[in-house]
Length: 365
Image 1 (cartoon, rainbow, N blue to C red):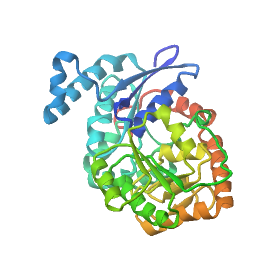
Image 2: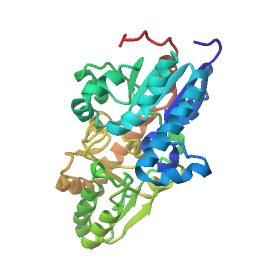
Image 3: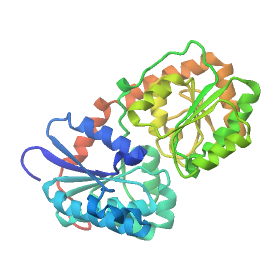
Image 4: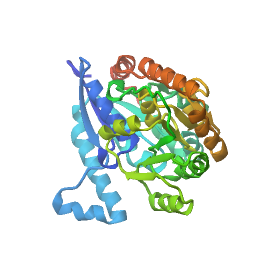
């Protein structure tokens, strides 16, 4: 390790695609830069090529090769200047293309390497791809995950992990007390199969049969956008508004305008959007997918229903509007929960503790 500040190179996705990891990485960097003894830099795994080569990223297979070459070249230039490499990770091919090169280059130059794994698909990833994923993960000096749920998953596969929760700056969110809960719902998960926005539209049909004036704001984007918009038309839903992609700094206004937050994911870990809803004092209805039960307790901080159960989802949405006192009490408890568990004062020192230390000897993990 060098004398002076510990130089940390965080490796993760750019904000071009508004994914949860990119947003979390940006917020983490802002917090880390306030800690004495750390120097923080960021390297994107999906660099934009210079204009003369930009055409390469418009051809599917060529795009992957060209982007990977540019990414690895950036690693070879910047990793030698760091003390610690912190690689954000998802699962499957994303794991191979993003954190694995960072870990390999980090080990090549004798740096301390952290794998920061976020995917709720970890169990399936380690079960079906474990023959190569597990040895590659052991390149890291530490595997850091955001929930005890993932600690348990990794332990079942023989990989020790430590939990450091996601950081949420609650001061960015407007904690609005709602005297009356209108049937005005918000969903803001991306339009992919595992986020199951389709079930929210189905459930909203049942809600609208009881509350003709009910509204649903659907924020986000993804491969299923056309199919979801077509579904809303086929169901003859009224007052459904697809906003398209929303920048992170604009999300607080959507939480503030809504009266109930809805999540129906089938696979999940620790959705930042759910924590943001908590911070906004917004009553939450959510599925119990993946690690969600570790942060959402039915009747305490949210209404929690079985993943994939559209009827239960609709019933819980109706219940929040019908039984407003308990819903508002849950929202207040949820706000206190994020203030206590996800503040920077709670999370920041844990990151510093895992950044500082020598790299492990080859084969130690």
